[in-house]
Image 1 (spheres, rainbow, N blue to C red):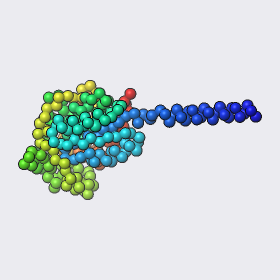
Image 2 (tube, helix red, strand yellow):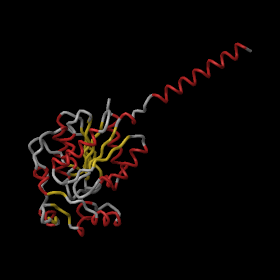
Image 3 (cartoon, helix red, strand yellow):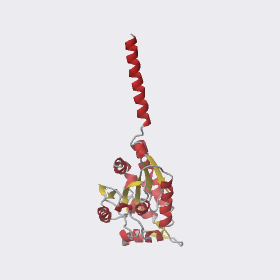
Image 4 (cartoon, one colour):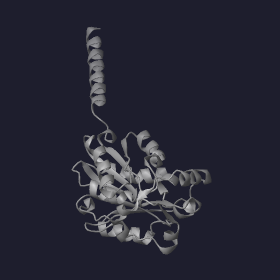
Length: 254
């Protein structure tokens, strides 16, 4: 009897020790923080559906809020978020947010970049230079007296969110966060994709960023490319597909 009790006691002790050890080891997802950066005319809340998928899958997620008042200010706002974090970071940007992460991604915490229907300029290039708006799109822009830019609300859905529910597109058209036009003319001083892994999602029905231009930028950067059928706001219309690419980047972090 004593031998049996001793054996059972040893088994129980081993099980408790194994359980404690498992609980003390962080999961691979918990070791990585994903930072999401919005583009022009929108704010960080646009990432909500992607945020929900990533956090449900166990990732820590932070959302930067660039003020869109100038390129340097937008990079600085993203850097403030990075400064609060410990451990490896996956930096994700949409649209003009791609230019922001290209510079902010130089932070040593950033281990990979994910471009979601986003600009990928090189050092010395501007956002406007790598993806100039076509004449039709230029006619849809509404500049303000103080140099900011809106998109004509009546053209919003067709130009950037044709695959969004009408109610969502209508709300976003009426809640635009205007961008200071001069931000598109600022030359980049760094290009993190030159020495860090990068991933690019090309939205094949994008009317804001020509898919062919997006593909060329991704090829130049050596990005791993995923093509998804959808609009410029593909991360809102297909959050799970976008999250899968982001999680692929996160799992590759050593």
